[in-house]
Image (cartoon, rainbow over all chains, first blue to last red; front, side, top):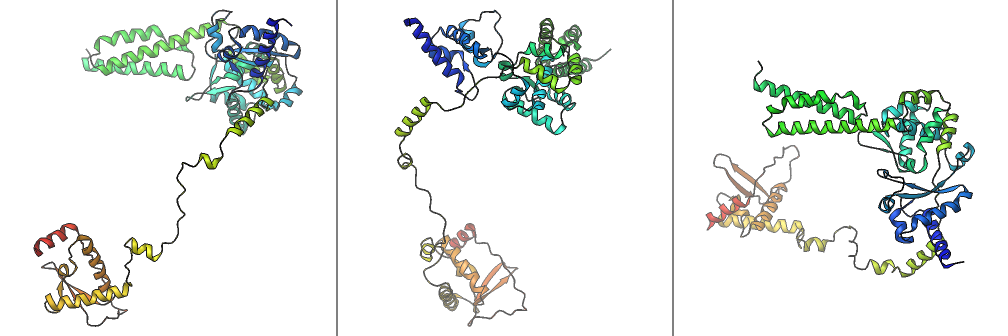
Length: 185
Length: 274
């Protein structure tokens, strides 16, 4: 193995440790943390790791917590502020989703809530979402479910009881695909 | 023709309405195009020359600020509509209402890529933890600098109460009888008609001692060793000792006589004595 290859192999190992094992309260690693540990070529390390993960149906996902960068190729400063996760590349089957620990009702409620908030430009009053969920879920469960989605980081709520999409939705849900799939049903 | 004051009042009301409307659009996610920006600018412009007071100028600035927020929302709305993410909320709502939950879940699973994360302990972290444990001083060393916890409460001993001057060394009855004898002696020496002025008896060199004597006197009266005689017109109080302790007569109504032993009273008595 050439010296260059050995260096990258070692960096990939370290990147795997950082990305798979939770280091903070929230999962994922900030770009600047990766740069500090792996060096300024960490985007290249991540892209090699992404290739390795492909056959395992996993991927390295980059999420911008604030405004998305204007250009396709973000700068190093923009990458520093992004958060990186390992997510599933493909889809789960309904049976697998149950194994992950989600009840079908709760998952459907989450899908509806996210889709509705997306259609409302990323912000919707909690009351409206609750009304929508009450169509198919028992009343007593609706509030609990929304609180559960908030706790998991899928949604966030402000003091005016407006719901927004939170970090976990940005990391895990392909918003465009979700809307397209719902409308095509 | 409207007076200036009337125009200012109307102007303030119009600006308040503008601010409320813009706030409602912002906070309740209403359609920002419900706000007629040109009309609001016309209103703001129309009333601007009337404003002289700083609070009116602040109101004007707030209206402009709120309007700017609505324009920003309008711009975001246009941007969102032009993106591929735009979906008519009503269309989506209808779709969601008619879809079975299984179909919704199926759609969601097609767009959901959950995060993969481990929370298990690793050999490396175990090693780190062991190293930390080895270097961690025992609690008895770390907590040495803290003061020992206070002793738990318990009943005070008689000696402690005497030390704190709550109890006297002598038995209370013995002390009371000595005090009674002192009263009888003082009445003989200084008293008139078998009685002595209250302050002449309880008054002492120090205020604290006076309080103590007044306290003991109250027991002399209560236990039937002496009685108080009050002259309400002259506002004089005398104390008359009995030769023998009087037994309480059950049917007789007991009377409580409050006597204030204030420092001022004591000082007044001291000055008179001097």
